[in-house]
Length: 259
Image 1 (cartoon, rainbow, N blue to C red):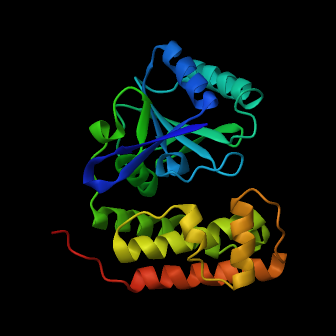
Image 2 (image 1 turned 90 degrees about the vertical axis):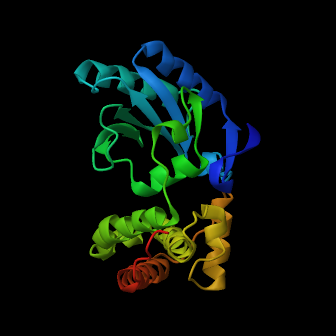
């Protein structure tokens, strides 16, 4: 894996992570003839990528809808990569019809071994616009509209009042360690963005988690790929309470006007 840092508009750094699996994936998508652009977002774009810990969050632009034939081709392609060069790398990709770039549209998305329909969230779009880069095709900034600090705050509020409110009403799911860890780091990132309008990567977010020092140390270890185990019930309760507090704070916070 090699890393290259570039300057991007609005003083946001673009960190280009070179991974053989992504390069192979890009070559195979280009060969299909109907994929015009492939973007890298998430931790691979923000300089926070951890092999076999982080997900690889990609977005491909396609000409026309992904019909049954295309679905079969993409499913076979991803399964082949997941069994070979991309094994264990959690490579996911949203396939966005170039004619349907609106924020509310759902798109075929390969994630954790299956193709599902999902939106490209506002936070994911902010990561693409501020830090993303192209494997091939145009830059994300040439395709997606710029996002102001208040736009990014609004995207975070939408996630808090959407998915995380849904999760808050299902306390049993917090017994899953991955959900609890994700909740704690997501709440730290959300508070940072609401306060500053800037994005915060997961590794830095661990240091701002609202949790006891022992749990922060265990989160830090898991972020580094170590299999530290936290008390299941206690961790779930800490994460659930932090999510409840953060959502309540976001609902109370007045919206700022854009200059």
